[in-house]
Length: 169
Image (cartoon, rainbow, N blue to C red; front, side, top):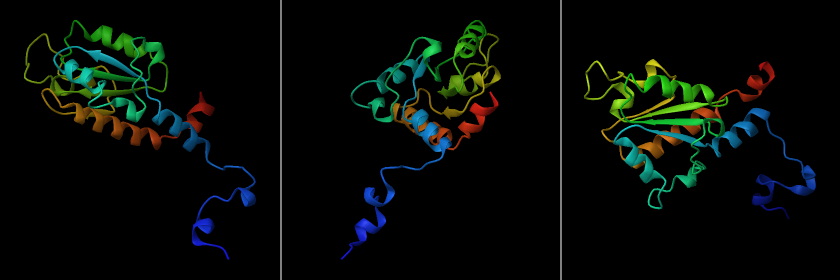
């Protein structure tokens, strides 16, 4: 007698210990569960970004606890705070030094749209110098909002065609 649970589950006697998957799915699963953020804490949003790394919010549940302060070791830049025109070339330079594939999260109203600052010194959104994948609203946004943005970015990465990107490079 065969039960329903063995019919629906993985049976190593029939499959022979072989797991079949698409290369895109396997590569994107690895990328999704091992994002290494490059924190760009430029203003008050950086405090909330630091809180995400603590035990209360625990970003390590999402595989992103390895905050790298070297652009060559990170693949997800989190721009947290006000970007001034004086700082913009350095932010772009650090982004250019990151290895591909790379993603950007704009955290807070200032990084997303310039926030309350409508002055000659403030960049009106980091998307003018970087391709932003996910925006986090708030001033400053709660740590839960950043975790939600990370989950949205992981969902986006999960659907990317990674194998074709490797073959064309």
